[in-house]
Image 1: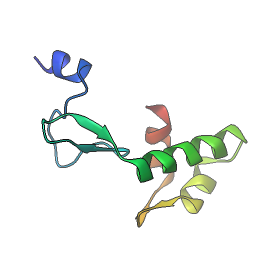
Image 2: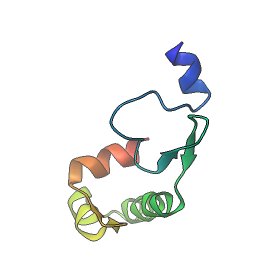
Image 3: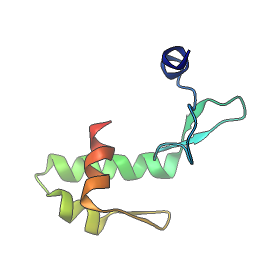
Image 4: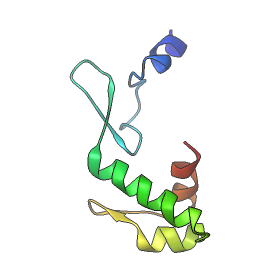
Length: 77
């Protein structure tokens, strides 16, 4: 059941949707433009060889601050 829902990009529960997404009216994960732009910015910085600590210090998206571990998880998706 959950495997099917995950394949269809449905929200599987928890306290909030993964960073970069919001939950749509039908329970589907919908990309959040501002957060997706933040992910793209982090990927560009990482591609230029910046450290996770550097990216975490520079990245602020809609008031969200990040630590190096959250940046690592974000880039791993």
